[in-house]
Length: 206
Image 1 (cartoon, rainbow, N blue to C red):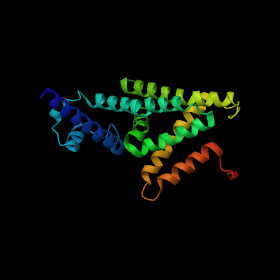
Image 2: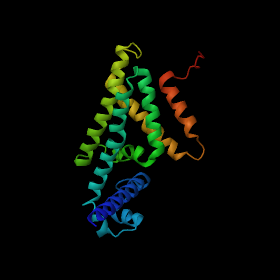
Image 3: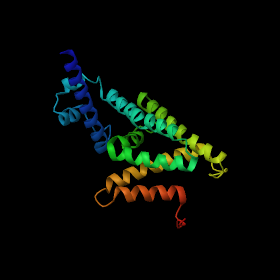
Image 4: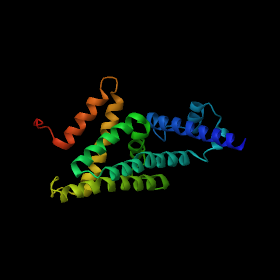
């Protein structure tokens, strides 16, 4: 009986997080109320508070879910393949594209809320900075290895480039979400990957 209760609680928690993530993306964190989230899940506000003490705690849980589902899995996959830097960067783009396809709201959530919390001190801002710093470290390792392998320009600033790639990825996610009815996901991902890895020059056939 206890096991069943735990399973039900876990399912409710997941449903709340999914609804909150969707609403935060659609309306923004500050534009979404606890009542909105409760309504979207069919719960009362009181029932929702049995799972999360506050809207802030709910957002923190979503940020950590992004870290676990995206960054942890990405790090494990890159370690498992032992690729050259250029191939590893291509692998990163493919992994990120697949992740966005599976969980589009979570994929762009950090981009949405980080804009809202820009320059605002507090737990959420600190958590966003921590997760972004870890995200950048994953990319910096690829870039530094690419420089050692003479695959990347030695004059590029590694730190700046890592955050620039993150920004380009998030912008691409947002634009695709806004225009997904007229864009093909496969074509969009391939074009984005080619643009970043090879630029606008024609690809030479082997």
